[in-house]
Image 1 (cartoon, rainbow, N blue to C red):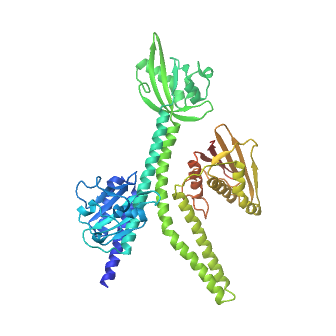
Image 2 (image 1 turned 120 degrees about the vertical axis):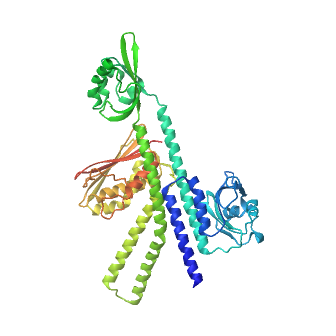
Image 3 (image 1 turned 90 degrees about the horizontal axis):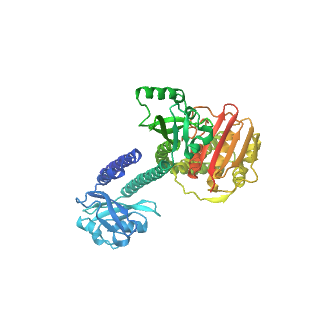
Length: 529
């Protein structure tokens, strides 16, 4: 009884420790700062003196003690272990499975490195951190006394390594997003700014080429006109009074400072700008010169960074949920099959109520498996396999399997593509998934039948695909791309998030316009490559 009680207590302690590790993973704190705490937690949970996180070098010839618990001062960050058979850690990477050693003194599979000899290590256990094709390194625990590790101990260490792997992947993903964002922001900052000069009356006297590009006016259209026409309200109305007040009092609101305000393009579009104004005196004349930067892209990138960080956190959670649900669902499905087989063997006629119940159970398991697949799709950062194809072929292959069902539902599908539409470079399977998801959504919005229209157009740099329906429309004021948000009674709220994820991975964008009771149009814009 004492042994059983001890095992129960050890299992409970390990479960609590894994919960703590998962909490740290979801918190998204600084991984380097967390490592001492995490390795101490692992060591104390397994009742050993030492824990280590070894990082595989770029040359893959040794492993650096990146973090640890129990080691002598100055060891962490400097000590190394050989790769290959030169150490238990290297051997772990070679055989790609947990390596357990009860007594290093009798070990013949690998050599014992100085790090372990100098600390009097006798027993130990090591597992890989990261994918087998691209490991980060090894998580190991050691004891200076002979120790037998149980299957639960091995399982605990493996799960701890998986949690560390998720934390590292998240950290690397965030760093990659930040690097890309910084690169784009620097590119924006070095782009030529608009330079506009006005006289004391507020009329434009200088309008450079960058200003033409940003505002959409030709130089001849704007020179001599009031600068107010480039401003949104209330700036347009207040500007003349501001100049008059400044020239009377010398009190400046914009001069000498960088301000973020709203400007207006020729087509009426409002957009944010950074505005820096300086005063220029020429003899008796006073002019004002403005340096203007279009920051609408910068604002979008900042929002995208926040969104990407949020999606990474959601993806980590989705992966954890998917892992926990997969095995029980498989077991439930097999159990239903066995029940049906036994019932059919024992009775020639099965009670319709039992058959109905089993059908409902099978349908629910199938629905949960579909949801699980979507969870995993949302969590994965999959590689994009670019191939050349045509939009016509993509659409045809994506919807042909659903066409009979659409016809039965009274839904007409109409495709209209120009004959000179260029080929495009995309991941064919993933873009077919995008088209299929959007057409299915369109069909579900037309319960009583209707029409799906698929059209395309192209410019020198982009290809645009539009999928329209005549359904009920989308309510205003909601974010339909928000993961797990849905307006459908049986929806999962993941389909459109996956659509956005795939399109963004292609460097494109997806948007929609909708009118209640009149339908919805989704627009996918892809760059030409």
